[in-house]
Amino acid sequence: MTVIVVDSADQVAAQAADLVVEGLAGWSNPLLGVATGSSPLGLYAELAQRRSRGRLDLSGVRGFALDEYVGLGPSDSRSYAAFVRDRIESPLGLERGAIRVPAGDTADPAGYAADYDREIRASGGVHVQVLGIGTNGHIGFNEPYSSLGSRTRVVELTAATRLANARFFEHVDEVPRAAITQGIATISEARRLVLVAVGEEKAEAVAAAVEGPVTTRVPASALQLHADAVLVLDRAAASQLREH
Image (tube, rainbow, N blue to C red; front, side, top):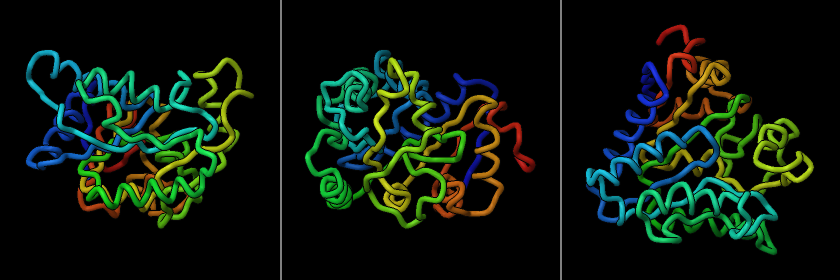
């Protein structure tokens, strides 16, 4: 695990973008794993700016999203399919559908999750996986006490996660109660992991993931076992680290 600490959110985005571009370079069919939510927005914006300035061409990139709410179809503006379409594919100049997102409106979520996992493996695997981290140490929707060997599956969302995500809905009662998420083992098969974190509210989780034991209580601690995992943090997010 490598930890990079910089001074600002803009520097986090720039450093993470360098790592993503470097990790995708040289592959004939580069596969990018994308995370949704607020943490990676700066990274995606930085990549989009580089493209708009003619410094970057990602048109050949394909990939997979980490997760999707059960019950939300791709036309729902609150779905992660909509996030990927509007915040990633379009700004980065990717073809529509280049990033596969789990089908939240499938009639058989559990069966679909298993098929999605097999599809990632059949593709040859993700070259660079972008990650955020929750205040409880989750990655994707892998909440505390998720198995480190978990695969893509349906998970019940905790009350805390639903409350944290309520800002994207009119009321917390509208937040779905389940999601399809790649498992920790699935995520860990990517060749490079790039986790971004900004702000003091992430500091405790970051410290537990980096300097605490590898434990299911802190799912992001699994990154300690990865051969090429890089955390890019601003100073606030790194403020509880003792050795960095």
